[in-house]
Length: 196
Image (cartoon, rainbow, N blue to C red):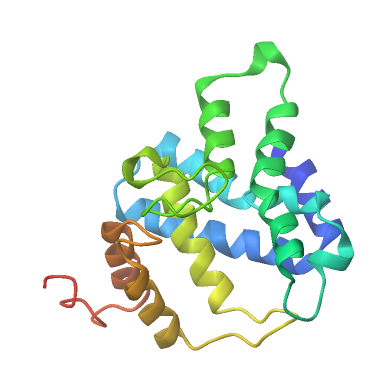
């Protein structure tokens, strides 16, 4: 129920965001399976990845759908989407429906733009203080964003996206998740580069 209602709102707002959420969920599930998440964790990962950008329904169209690079002020508005998304999902439940799973779902959405080095948003969390589901979504989200066309740029090649993931390992992303993801999407490519 939560999933379908909110997914419909995302699709209504912006089909590109809707498609991105779907692909991010697929990548995240593959990565979650690879790193050994259990069935319940995989379910929460799937739902939170599908809804990770639901907060963008609160972003004005002139910013969300802008065909050119965002200004600093516009980017600051976009950055609020992770907080708004967590609030939207949290408010979907009554107080007596809030469970550990709902809390995990809300946290995964809120923190999907945190960076492993602490330089992310909205709370500047660092390393293992970032929810693990958020860390998985972050890798999947970034990869899909890089390898998909946007209104303001063309998609990059998989090899270039892999190089960026590798460069950002330990900075933006958890190193073991980057390694697992690269091995998952491109078996054999860069497999030994993390052993150094």
